[in-house]
Every structure is written in C-alpha cells, then in structure tokens.
Image (cartoon, rainbow, N blue to C red; front, side, top):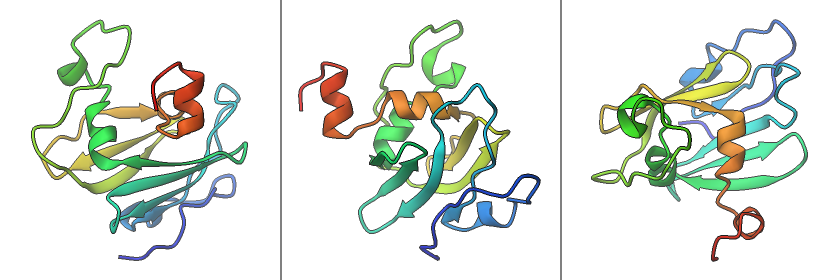
Length: 140
C-alpha cells in the first residue's frame, strides 16, 4: 500500500487509478460544496483516514467512527433527517474508497457494507477533531 496523498485532480483528469490506491485524487467540487477535501490519506497504522480540507483544516477519522456514521438508508432508516452514530459490530477497515461525483466518497468496508455515500458536507459536519467537537458543543 502506498501512502501517497489523495490530491485534487485537474479539471477533467481521471481519478480511477488513484481510487485503487490508499491515497486518492479528489475531483474539483461543484459550487455547492464550499469546503472540500484536497487530500484524503489512509493511515493503516492508526486505523484512521486523514482528510485535509480546502480551508486548511486537517482531521483524522477513525475507520469505526466513519462506518458508524454511514448515511445509507439501511443504517439510518428511510427518511432519516439526521445521520446518527450506529457503532459497527466489530472493527472495520476500508477495502476501497471511491469518489462519487464531485461531492462525496464511498467506502467498501471489511464487514461487507458498501452502500453509504459520504457527502463532503457530512464528513466535515462530523469532524472528530477537538476544535470541531467543541464548536458542536460536544464534550472532548
């Protein structure tokens, strides 16, 4: 596994090859996504995914944390208005990470789950860093 960073692609550049590696290229986002990842890097030694955002913010998301916030209807129910944490039954790791358009990424997890589409806005809203948790009023 390579630890090369997930880098922003030039407009129209192919990102398929990058999505097979532990580091991925992020397509240029639509105007609707004001803050977007510029780098996404697997960190297998700590079981985390590092995301560096266009505003310079950096955060490490534990794999189980991301799996627990899976936004799919199977995990959250149909018509769910807020994504709530559902702890995975056992520890997971991403087998693949794929871009979804210019607005999200998806994971295929070691527990077989692969239907969640994680919008960039969702990933930023669940940022686990101390600063973001404090802004949300969560205990650190």
